[in-house]
Length: 193
Image (cartoon, rainbow, N blue to C red; front, side, top):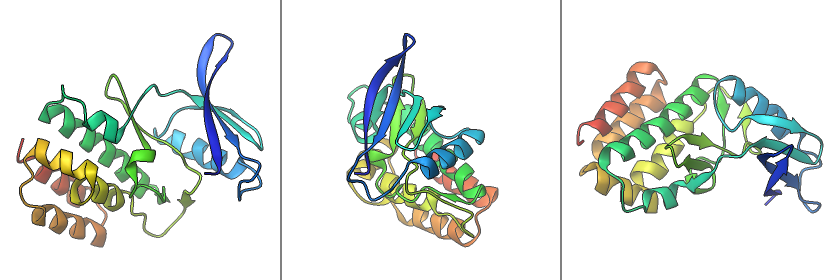
């Protein structure tokens, strides 16, 4: 890992403080902070408060990783669908801005769900800007819907019996990233609920 994150209190408010490790392969955190500022302008990520070469102070999102959230006993399919849809909508916003997060195939380290079901994409250190085509929706969908522990829980909750429809919708979206293809994917998820 390039950094460690601590919970800190500044002026009686609690924040997340990200500190660059001295043995990190990055000389500064300025690029990550710059990307964080950009994604904040489109409503993504915890609010950036301050930063320097070695530190980033941001809003603390008090919540659970996506896998811990999905393992809760009190979930119903409507809450799960809401969270999945919210994650994918944020990914779609990033795709439309040509911002590729770069690590959303491993969602457990990059999504926090608060107790009020607010979804936050975090950790922009590997993000690339101005890619001709970003793959946030397809990467996140892989983890949420196609393979792995998270998708296992979600498929059971949403009664997604066949992944073929989802894969077909994802292929269409990958070919042509537009609102119609994205909405078609979301509609497919809603059908079982």
